[in-house]
Amino acid sequence: MKKAFTLLELVIVLLIVSLTLTITLPTFFNIEATSMENFENKLKTATNSVFNLSNPIELCADFKENSINVGKEKIPLPRGKKLKYMILPGKIISSESSSKFCISSKGLETVGFLAKESTNKYLSILVFLPSGETEIRFLSEAEGETFKDKVSKGRIVEWFNYY
Image (cartoon, rainbow, N blue to C red; front, side, top):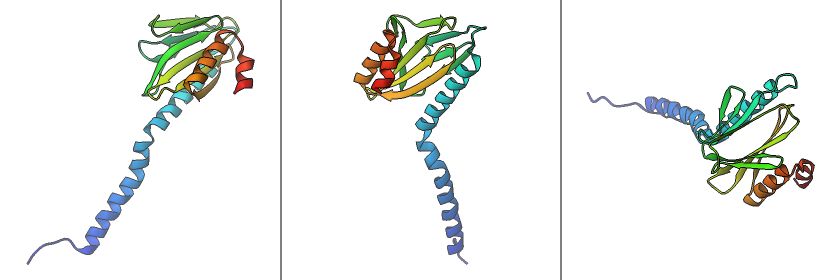
């Protein structure tokens, strides 16, 4: 007597495989979005929870480690995004000139970060000190240059009016 799979067994196996693929494939292809969402959540949580006027904290751009450090918490940028600039009023620090740059949240300042993607787009991160509010946007290359200009000149209101 030959042993073979019955039609019912084949249907059950196909059902199990299709359910597994239905669950895992969307998760697999949304890794970048999930990674970006995780980065945003970690950064916003860290900046909102640690900043206050009575206890200044350090905010660092670690170009070598490709991360933003808020106090003792290290928040790595998502895959495919390379931290290029830390922008302060009157100063632009690039990854080419420094491996790490830190500031204290003592004064009322605005700090910008620009991370470049492989597609010549920028991820802009704007942190308002000492409140810790964070604004994250994706920009074209020209918009990234405008962002650097407005933040470094302290013209944040112009930036928000423009975008």
